[in-house]
Image 1 (tube, rainbow, N blue to C red):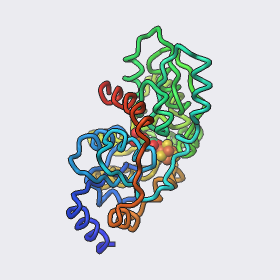
Image 2 (cartoon, rainbow, N blue to C red; image 1 turned 120 degrees about the horizontal axis):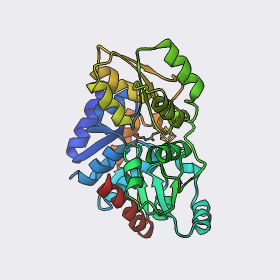
Image 3 (cartoon, rainbow, N blue to C red; image 1 turned 180 degrees about the vertical axis):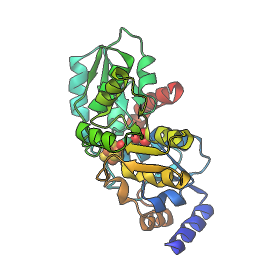
Length: 311
Ligand code: 13P
Ligand code: SF4
């Protein structure tokens, strides 16, 4: 594996490439990346980097977003099969029908959507800025929020806004992290801080419960929000409700803290498709280039740029 790491680093320098990796990537992939982060941070890095070649270790919609933001750069995805069940839970035909039923509504799409869906949207958002984006839209305007019903419900509860209609989509990994699992963990680890991703099945009920019972051990965060919280908190025990790939960096950076997954089965197989071998091959042959057709990219860029400007 070390040989491969050396070869990737040499190739990266030679080609002046940058490697971006999501917080859910395999540990060895995170280790060779120039930057590891959540969806919003990776979008910002892709926009700012001077590198002309971006190796995106994540899933397809993330590479598409990077390519839309920087169409002059070459964005490669080490495995083109790295999809996302959440992004697949809404099609452009479905969105067109939904918009026709709500002709005056503003469409807010989670970043976990295809470029074509973003092109039909007014705003894009990620888990770390969804509340802020919704708050920036005039209160009287109806909002169509898609595709994640849990993130949507969380945003609705947090903003207290009634005029949000939510699409019935979900991520197959986070949906399973629900109430039962959470309650068991809370009893087993009474002193732990609970960090919950808003895509989780339990996110809204957990947030409401924490408000109702004044329980300040429950926090809802994006993946990087969780990492920052663990780094800065004086607490010694944490239960993390999201994909288990995030535990690598948390544990490495906080050796004195006990960091447990809410569910060991919360594994995103799409994220785990990226291996060092695939990174090396993609970089060597500059293959698996992700590009978005110009008319779609231009429309999607408006929604993404509105997000980058707001959040
Ligand atoms: P973050 O934006 O919090 O990294 O989430 C992305 C994702 O795909 C969560 O499943
Ligand atoms: Fe998509 Fe869920 Fe995987 Fe995130 S964890 S990339 S939302 S399938």
